Image 1 (cartoon, rainbow, N blue to C red):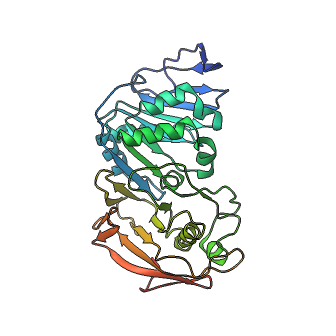
Image 2: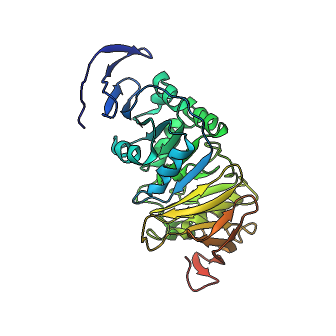
Image 3: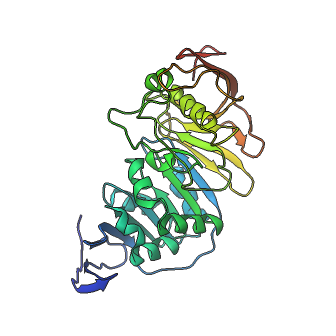
Length: 346
């Protein structure tokens, strides 16, 4: 990273000595707090601005970013301060989003541990954001670092304003009421493993984390066709209803390079994808009731899960859980084996 016009000073930040670096408008700058263990990067105006905002929820299934995410989030932010939250990586998003969102600034905060979730500087940046986007990586870090902290509270307050909030891959994984937390993952949670034993140690779920509008009773999944994950999505749903977390399990699952944009005021949703992507689909799934068999060490049997698939030509109403312009079908798992009412499980 190139930093211009750097003026270094020693400053007391939340009881810790921090190194500050400042830069003129349009140039990147960085701020690292060693005690709170976070890194901060900004491009554009580092000072806070206030703008009128509108709500938008963006959920991308990973892969190359969909430009329209940041164009529309920037418009809904009123051109204010756009904050990217991460638990790995660096400032990769800043210049890319800044060119698309027409915002006053794009700021990235990289969390290194849970301490940063109570840091006044970090909280000030999040609470004064006009848009927030959660990057990909490892969702277990987001759960460990943010659950039951002021960062979680700050995101909820932003959702109520409302401001646009989004996430991709691991960032999408935590946006539903329930999430696959990946706390115990070693080799990656697969469809085969989930359907063979839905109580295997790698299938870890979280609740009482983020609660965003229109995503009650929802769990999400990502990289769907690319990593053949629709069977594991069903395993997630089976666990939710079997464990009594909800009587009606719902899932929103997206292919890579594909994003769902939700209007939180109306519950209407539409799809955006990268140009010429071969599988630009989002899947809405709903449980019919309890699984026939969902027990530790036993293959899953769960029949007639409703699926509705849309691309950019379709739409979905989250209030009624009904879609138009897409394809509806059912999936069933019998003794750990997945089948479809159509010629493809996808």
